[in-house]
Amino acid sequence: MTTKENPPASAAQEAPASGDPSKAVLKRSRRDVLRSGGMLSMSSLMGTAALMAQPGEAKAAVEWAEHFQKNYRLMTPEEKAEARLRLEKRYSGEYNKKVSVDITEAQPGVLMGYALNIRKCIGCRRCVKACVEENNQSRGARPGERIEWIQVLRMERGEFTADKMNQGYPEGLGIQVGGNAYSPAGQVLEGQYQYTPEAVPEKDANYMPIACMQCEKPPCVKVCPVRTTYREADGPVVIDYNWCIGCKMCMGACPYWARRFNLTTPVLPKEDMNPVTHYLGNRPRMRGVVEKCHWCLQRTRHGRYPACVEVCPVGARKFGNLLDPESEVSKILARKNVFRLKAELNTFPKFFYFYD
Amino acid sequence: MKRFAVPAAVLALCGAAILSVLAQDKPAGGEAAAPAAAAASAPAEVICFESRKGATEITQREIKPGLPNVKCSPTTGAALWYADPYEGTVPMGKMPQMEAIPEGLAVVKPRSEKLNLLAQCGTACHNGTYPVGFPKTNRPVPIPTMEALLPDAKNLQHGRGRVWCLDCHHNTKRNMLVDHYGDPISIDQSQLLCGKCHGDKLRDWRDGIHGKRIGDFTSTGKKRWFTCTECHNPHNVQDGARNKGFIQLQPETPPQLPRGFKDAAFEKTHAIPQH
Ligand code: SF4
Ligand code: SF4
Image (cartoon, rainbow over all chains, first blue to last red; front, side):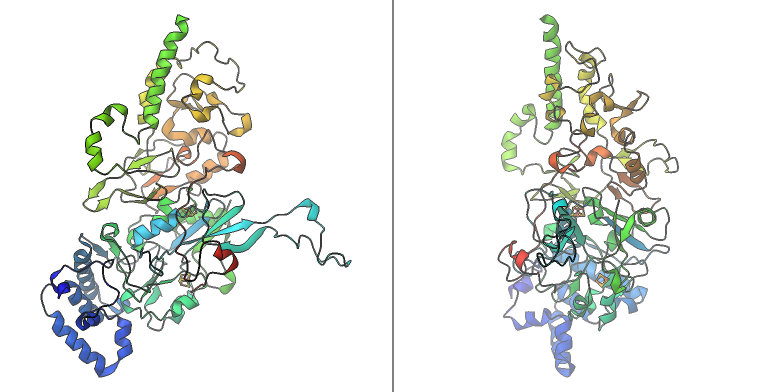
């Protein structure tokens, strides 16, 4: 009863489960609908329709329409515009501010590329937090409620010392197999995500940020059973959240730990919500869908740098158009020492690590 | 005796001016008294720094209802998000070998306006006629009067002792830097000075490979360029024992602990479940 009179509660205040059966139906995700199957699900949907005919239930009405919209790639321009208006209305009501949902298509002649200077990164994690602010990730306190797309990996430096130069393994048996087997040499490859020093960069550590690599041959796209994730013409791999059934196949297929699952209803405080969104980008997500980095489509489709590039204090992050020989990434590819992560998997990332 | 007294008084004045520049984040003494009562009820001004502490700072305010110009990190005070990356910028001006970039597409945040407060320093003591006791040679020595004002002046960590004040600062125009010919350079154009020695870095910076840039990513788009001293502290580039170009910062908070993890150290012995 109370839910009918109050304006739609924010995601933060919404109780995880409701005893009210009508509300439970409204909160069903696409996955639930698919799971229940056949006539049973149709009848329950009809019931929902009757409930939603009441005025003042903008959010519910929109959800109802969303259940019947097509996969974003199959929509006509008119249908896209409709979907956009629907969502703008719904989010503006839900978050109490004017929310825009962009549907700008890929720009011709643009293939986005990213480069990161691995020697410059100081591990400050500002890129991680900027991404959360920009892309409306869930930021609750309970387990599974905090979602960050970027991870910064701390790696300890090993050592090469003169006195151990000819020390071999096994020692004392007269067999010399090679130097320095007793202490970590060069880079210690086991990384750490939960580092908490007073100040960074630390003397004996290197840092390696990881997020979605926007692969040219993305395994996540290959495995998606409902084809909701796909590669856009200008590069980024995107997700139509409305068609995601939350099967997590893509999470299993991604070799870079780039995808996150909304285990709970996302916690997104109204005042912190970023009202400039893109349909395929940072619009608020629902429970039970997978999300990931999309190179800030809402910004980059209009020429602006991604949020992580704008806040990196050392300028380790570079972004540009791979098809433009004058762009920053093209210059880096031409001039610096570049490598890609897990290149042997033939995913062909458009995310390049480089060093001077 | 009288000869010393006058410069000392002026120096004290300069000191006050510099300190007021440095202490911009706190309301100055005179203003603080009046709105003190109001400040008790109104929330304090949020000021965050951009790349490093002590360099460019931004005051948080609302552009539209519910939309701040910048979001500041609650844990470290760093700027985490910009609504308008060009806020408070001016055209960078002429740069050698960058004639192809149309005027206005490369913008910087000016520092010279703040330094204009210090004009009295230049006219009183630093007008080229040095005070008594001022070193005559180029051998770096501590300058006791300036130490009180600029704590890092004494401990210059740049070029391992080969560089001193007048290698970078113009000897009569105190608000300016100096180029190879002894001509003044605007303090907003520190790259022209730094590039005198660090030519390879200047080339990379010009091409957008080194250093930070925000705004428009297309090669023909408008961008805000960060000049050298916005990221590097020129008086302490080597940052002590670490001997690196960027000072240490407090990091943001780590990711949420995965289920079953007791604390951060737990990760060292147990791998994070990847999915
Ligand atoms: S990094 Fe992972 S999520 Fe991103 S495109 Fe590649 S496989 Fe897909
Ligand atoms: S903001 Fe830049 S320096 Fe800081 S962790 Fe991210 S990439 Fe590294």
